[in-house]
Amino acid sequence: MAVKVDIFARNMDVTEQINDYINKKTARLDRFLSDIDEARVDVAYVKSARSAADRQVAQLTIRGKGYILRTEERADDIFAAIDAALDKMQRQIERLKGKRHKGRGDGKSASEVALVEPEVAESVAEAMPEIARRKYFTLEPMDEMEAIEQMTRLGHENFFIFYNANTSKINVLYHRRDGTYGLIEPSVG
Image (cartoon, rainbow, N blue to C red):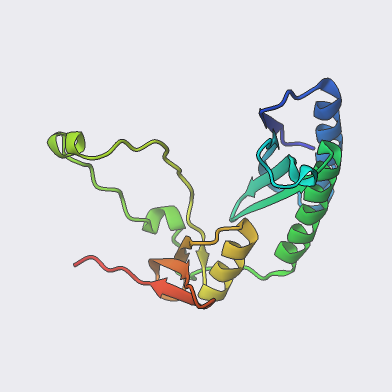
């Protein structure tokens, strides 16, 4: 695989055997998708899992231009969990490659159109709670159906932020209690 695989462990040690196994197995993803920028494998031992068969967890995340794919599988053996996560990832890649990507058509990249986050005054920042984690990502233009598919593919159960190619605005898609989806279309007032 041309891209380096980052391996992270929680509550377990990554032995040389596990490291070699992950690198060997993830190398085949390059055959299915050649434009992978980043690959990350998280392995964990979850002692508090209800079933002993769910204690070994393997999570695989790959990023590329315009997509993020993530799978998570649990098993009683870490190697079985890795294999299951890779099989699931291959199915996601096949779905991704089957899709047609539509652009906005105006020639601007999403980063040029994205809103700049306003700076918070220092006195206000002292009264605010501490932000424990920040995430940065590039918004790719997509329509509402693509956003629902991406939300499902990533395993986001509550909400998903995306740049709506039809309205040229940032939208928030959320899952409602009745099983339907809601769409928030913010505007600057």
